Image (cartoon, rainbow over all chains, first blue to last red; front, side, top):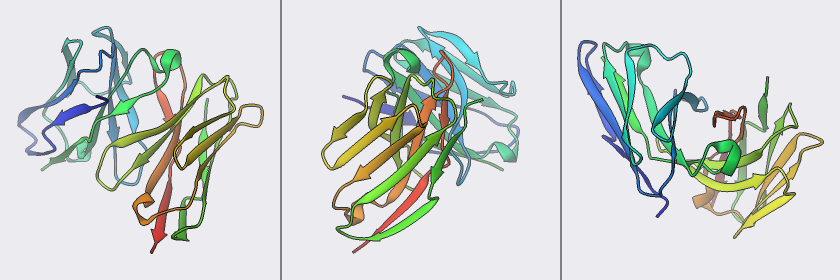
Length: 115
Length: 112
């Protein structure tokens, strides 16, 4: 099973709403990632969790709040977003950090639209 | 700073032709290089991972080569099919914390 599952697939929210994106993997991977992808652009890293601890925050605005409740789950809490935050949010996992074991597995993404 | 470039940006071939996709990187001190496929509006599917110590990696009709000294990787797809139509991205880690630097991708269309 090399599957990373993301929910919801689509999300529409207003600028005052609070919502969450969820990501789950059962591959025993200890590193999990959030990437953001705008249309026609490559993905850009937002956060890295290693062994359930936040390792990297790529200067992401505080309206995005990641959470790693356990080694299989990764959440992204959204609050007071702006229309320019509309994008495809991708979750990924790897056995270790990419430099050690390499292969990242991505989910299908959550398409977020902020009105 | 590592920069990753993919040329061409777009490619259209008739079914049955072999595909050749190029990826170049500026810093040859890479740990590995990964090729992905992305269908419109979907996530990324990992195709091949080449470790820095390897020269090539094969999976079915796919073959990827790596030449660290020249900062290049090439993805070959043999006997292309319409189902191979997608955007192909290459990526390398830029630090020890798993940050991937992606190329802009090559959009491939295989016509029947």
